[in-house]
Length: 199
Image (cartoon, rainbow, N blue to C red; front, side, top):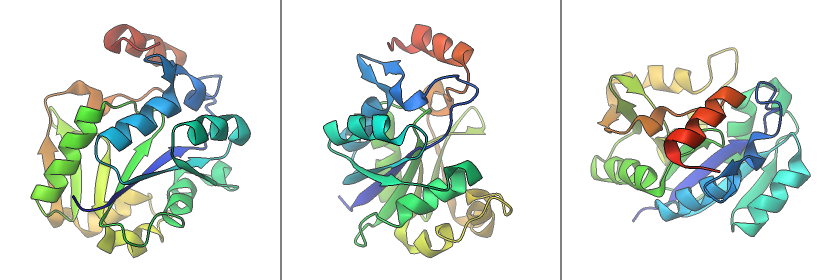
């Protein structure tokens, strides 16, 4: 299997949640540990976790799960800075780059399905979709690494890369609403715990 390097962004302030999202309880562990395991079990060759807010506390969880950390000192400037921080340390030999945020819990089976679709489709970009809406994780060919490293908040981040290659985006349909799950608020978190058995 080609080497897939996963970047898990976990640097934000979690202002709407009111407490650090990476440290939330999820399926018997913390959310960040769950995500790391799902990414590895789903086929990632390496997982780089980008930390910022509460960096030391999150880093402790990361080290115990076998992933690597990179600190993003500019995390207050937006998500693009975290993606670029992750890109700066992933393997030079990576064949593909997978992007996922810590507050988007996924199962290993979802990750594996998207990885396999990307590989078998020999795609430039693979975007999972559920009922006509895009989800995560996203996978990019390593040939786009340079373009990804130049994204900015002003140019809408990775959307700019999508737009530049919109005819080469492989839309992978998954009949699983979890690919759209995003834990932004306490209410969303509590609802997700009920629906997906976390905690």
